[in-house]
Each structure stands twice: as structure tokens, then as C-alpha cells.
Image (cartoon, rainbow, N blue to C red; front, side, top):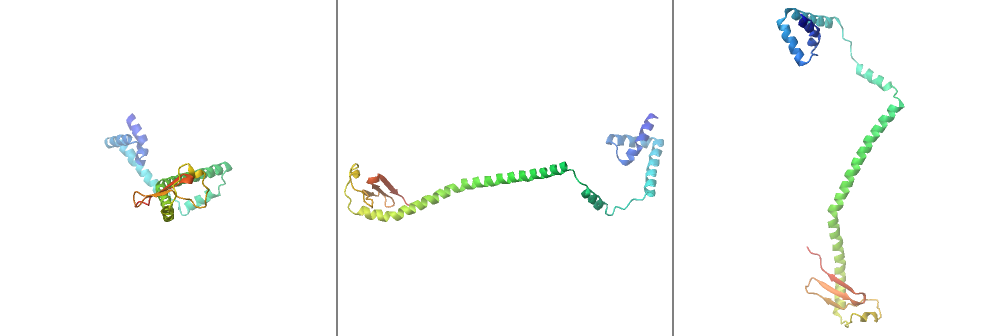
Length: 193
């Protein structure tokens, strides 16, 4: 009889599906074998059906809008408004830092990738300028130049144009010339494809 009293107390939650799976199984097995508990379960179910028939459900038209309007009219304390503002500010700040990190990474990758091409462009421009000066150097070199000893250039008067001591070329595409007064040696090599 103690078991029946326990089962009868669980009939309501059993019908509503509020019991744990092992309790649901225990009540179901007991109701199958006990006529008195089965009657209690049937009575509880009939009471639920009768109550649902008698009660009228309120209309819920506009309920959600009314609740939302009421929420909007509630004045929030200053502390809550400040916390919400700083929370949203923190989210925007975090997004800004993430965007900045992505932009910095893109800039570094761009510099790393484009630096060799920029150097190549600068070197080709310098070679073009040297090539433009090469015909003038060749004509100067073709004229007779007096031999100058390495230490003699200090005593010679300086002129507006530089004199080249010699123009050498082991290969037709390479030119070397020396300017003794400033100890400058220029080697011209054309761009390599």
C-alpha cells in the first residue's frame, strides 16, 4: 500500500511528463498491474480534460507588442545604461583592434612581397642612367688621354670636365672606366633579362 501511495502522488507529474525517465517507467509498470492506481491515473486525466473545457483561453492579439511597449517605457538606472554603453564600446573597440591587426598584417606582407620588385626597378633605372652616360664616356675615352701616375693627379689643375684614364671592356656588353682625380671606378653592366 505504501507503494500505491507513492505512485498516486506521482500520477500528476507522470501525466504532464515531468518525471525522470526511470520514474516514468516505474509508474507505467505499476499502473499496468494495479487497478486502483490505474483508476487514479484515469481520474486525473479526466479532471485535466474537464478543466481545459471549462476554462477559456484569453486572446493574445497584440500581447507581444504591449509587452515590448511596456519594456520601452521603463526608465533604466544610470548605472545600467553606462554598463550597456561601455559594453557596446568594448565590442566596437575590439573589432577596431582586430581590423587594425589585419590591416597591419596586410601592409607588412605587401612590403615583404614588393620590396624585391622595387629594388629591381630602382636598379634598372640606375643602369639606364649609366647607359645614357656611356656614349659620352666612350667618346672621351676614344680621345688620347695622357698617362697619369696614381699620385700625380693632386698636382694637376682641376677642370670642369673629368678626364677618364681608360675605358676597358673584356666583353662588348661591359664597360669599365676610371677617373683618377677622384679615385672613382665605374663599371657599366646592362640589365639582364
